[in-house]
Image 1 (spheres, rainbow, N blue to C red):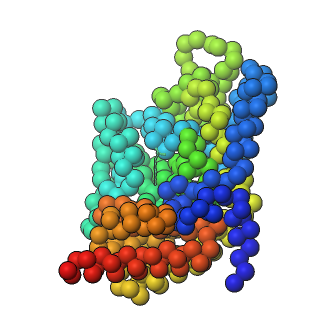
Image 2 (cartoon, helix red, strand yellow; image 1 turned 180 degrees about the vertical axis):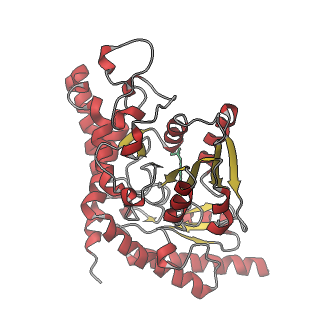
Image 3 (tube, protein in one colour; image 1 turned 180 degrees about the horizontal axis):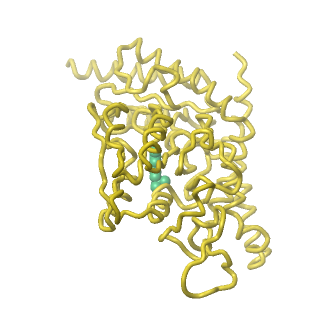
Length: 389
Ligand SMILES: Cc1ncc(COP(=O)(O)O)c(C=O)c1O
């Protein structure tokens, strides 16, 4: 079968060295990332301090505008930060938890960094309410939507859950939250670059994410989207001079916030990381996320069919509409199996209580998937024989 996306393979050197099925954790490095790193270093080396006015100072906007089409949001609405944890901290620091509306509702299964940030706000009046999971893997909406009420300031949830790659019905969460006057932040880290997004149509208030996974952008390039019609009403306490309306006037005293994405910035921008991240964003934009999604659905189905055929416990939804880009398979001895797969150069990962996570991306061949599954067959058989001895 001809697959036009495979023409990108030579751009990702690691693919020639192993079976790389771990883009839900760390996307492969594009060759052009090295060119981007050189672009940054050349500017520093040859232009020195002039580099600030020749592009560095506005690197957050330039980089955020490459993310905007992937998120389905307008240019100028995405602020670059270091990571999701910082993005959440900036966002939460612009809310007030001292009045009656002080709850933050978050699923127990959400990525833990979100919990840790919210916990820190208890000392400023926030009440963190965890939506329990009935089985440690799923969080059915009917069990936690009722927790969102007039006492809720913020609802946080991942659009795609990191453990089992299930897609949350974000529209239902947002509808419920907005009906009671609460705001919603979506953690889109496991979605951006593999799931087409239209956050404007969804009407979500905030979104946070990062670049190391499906965007192949490397570390240090987190992002915060704020709905443009509410951005001007927010005054983040976690701030700095890059968020000032006139940073180079060096005005002292009270903060005067910039309009636009700069409002949510802090200090000196992370020029190197954001310049490098642009390489991955450009490739994902050029391919287009709908094509990536179509391929991902076909290849994750290939993995699922194999797993179900073997009677392995599949933790990822089999329904295309509810499945993100990863397949999680909870086979016995999965920690040991993950180590054995990696020792055979089949690069996957493992999450406690969920199992082996395996993810094709636009650069993956069907043969690589079949090879990984054949090695998995071989190893599970070996483990069974060893156990029965
Ligand atoms: C859904 C989700 N949120 C957040 C993170 C990480 O947060 P941070 O960018 O703060 O490292 C991850 C994974 O690393 C994730 O899968």
